[in-house]
Image (cartoon, rainbow, N blue to C red; front, side):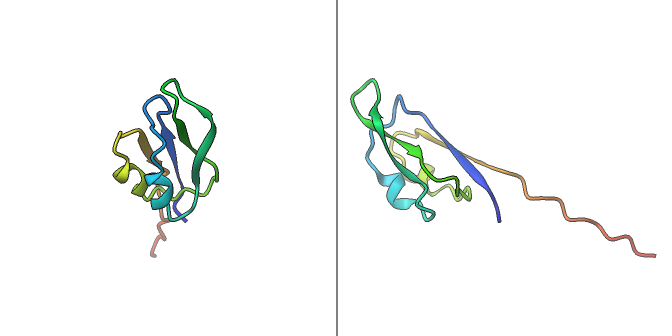
Length: 80
């Protein structure tokens, strides 16, 4: 399974929840805290991100960066 993670810039997130709705893994949620602008920001609540990028695509503030772990290299089988 491909593994990923997200980095959310809490300072510019306005808590619109579009990313929460678009996450097929249900890994995002609103934080209990507020940012400097008075918005509850989004945070990663489950470590089940696949790096699908849906959240970053729908974010109107471009507050989300998605990181994907590289696929493991396939072991080459030597033929004799």
